[in-house]
Figure (cartoon, helix red, strand yellow):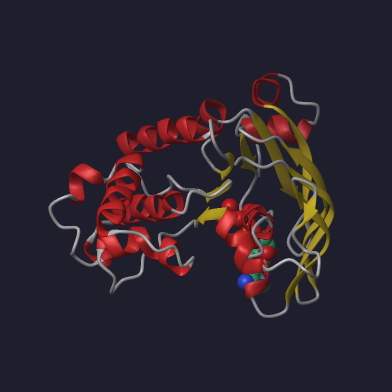
Length: 259
Ligand SMILES: Nc1ncnc2c1ncn2[C@@H]1O[C@H](COP(=O)(O)OP(=O)(O)OP(=O)(O)O)[C@@H](O)[C@H]1O
Ligand SMILES: [Mg+2]
């Protein structure tokens, strides 16, 4: 299930703009990796290259390699739709399908993947995924209401339920808790710890305490100035990154002296 990720010399472009430069890193299966760094340094951009969601933007492209268990996602024979089936994603802004019901939203990714399932199995998957995202109790009596009828934090948890319903090998989460209250945030962090047993997880977060709590490894990205590309400054075991980072920029950022 869980897959190993190796990124080799990855450059990420929007047209002629080099947004992220020369990233090389390795992510072990069954681990949680946190991406941290200032706004605009390319965390979301880089994250989207890990399931080929970057290239859906016109003019967007990459150079270099992203290997999952040794297979380059950017090889010509690789189907991007199949990649996204194995690498699930939760976006920075919640994006439920507004006209679909809550239950249909949870199943949306599964249906796209053409899995046939019985009514009973579908109901179980809806309940299990919503429980996993700590949303079940709030919505169990209105599963047929539209996804857009939920609050922002509920919508984000619905998107998490949708992502885990497809049972991906890798789960990418872009600031999944930025719209959540502290209780839901802790529930999502517990969920991440649980999912780590089966999945490879990458989470982008602006919350240093969260990175310290949930991740095994932390990668710090930075940008030299507007128009310059974002770069990976360092990556290490999370306790090391938060106690004795090698780079001064990392220390400044995590201690709040950045900017
Ligand atoms: N669709 C796009 N087209 C062109 N440039 C883009 C696009 N999306 C992002 N960028 C640019 O790429 C750079 C990196 O943006 P990105 O969203 O990856 O940063 P980030 O680290 O996720 O920031 P934040 O912490 O604010 O979410 C920025 O200069 C941004 O303006
Ligand atoms: Mg972002």
